[in-house]
Length: 303
Image (cartoon, rainbow, N blue to C red; front, side, top):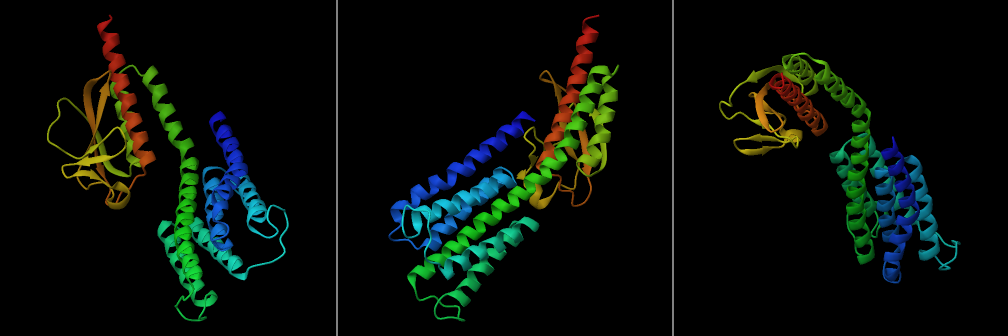
């Protein structure tokens, strides 16, 4: 709990400081850059704060960014006062909001596609000549490119924040499995019981058809689930998020105090794509089984 409180406090501090720091960095370019471009870059800061923090931090960053944008980049400078409006700036910022909304409810590809679409329609409706896919002003061209780049960037941040929310929701279930196995490791009379328990956990965790624990020496060279959660095949590391787990059996080796005791042989379901978090939990469960074997062996030698 303290870790999350600390992270939230850090996000609130970032919400106050990051927009000011970004504005200070951009201040030397005030005479040469349109305010639209400055506003776009401040949007990236706001979304980044929201992605690492929470809703309150994101809202605070938005207020901070708006205040410092007014103070440094609108006339009269260095006063909290706005005496003119820019339709293009408003249009660009509204388009960025749409991009972020698409990414938040969809995925990275949808967000990137929304960014491309936003840049295209900004050109079509808001740059001269109107209602043509043509830009004749270098300032408008810069703004359109920035809209595309910033839109892609914030869409990736929004998609990442959505993914982190899913991970947070599932973390409690993962921790419960680890705790259950750890408790069993200390209470089981024979390590085989722990190995069988881990087998039952691995099947739903990694979306497996079958799983078994194999004692003894290593035979063959099947794909291997590594301690860092990656999957190594004879062709190198496999991108599980993209290609899924291999169709053949995968081994997950079990060690205790540096000694090899056996391996879990896992047959994935077709198209199984367990998350990195799930794979790391599987490695942790295998470590618990290794500890059970090691503790049992040490207890037997001490008798």
